[in-house]
Amino acid sequence: MLLTTGYGDPAGPLNSSGYRPSAAVGARLPHAWLADGHSTFDLIGPGPTLLSGKQLPEQLRREFGLSGTTALLVRPDGRIGACLYA
Picture 1 (cartoon, rainbow, N blue to C red):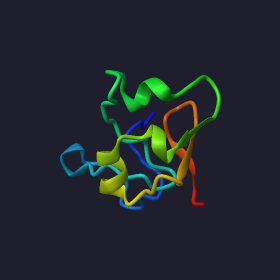
Picture 2: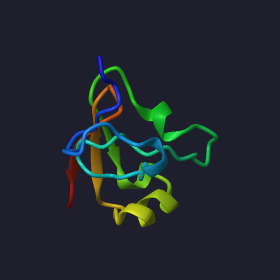
Picture 3: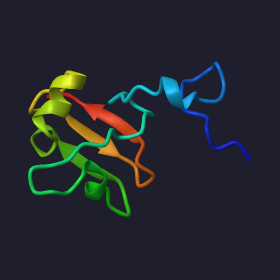
Picture 4: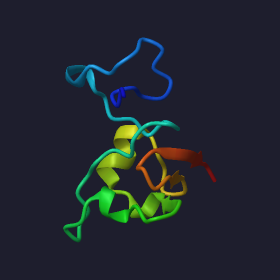
């Protein structure tokens, strides 16, 4: 079983030294610390989780070009299922 393959990666297994966090659909939700001491991973529930732009740290929004009105639909496995723009 090969567990190191990412979505949209035609080159094959991921190289851990070349990992670049992304907010693209299919990418794993990037890790970031929230003001209350929790991480973005703590926000993921047992079902699909909708994260509004205001729930995401400003640093993360700036890094990935997300506005305060952008929302991410995150699957229970931590992958971004949709990026919704308002």
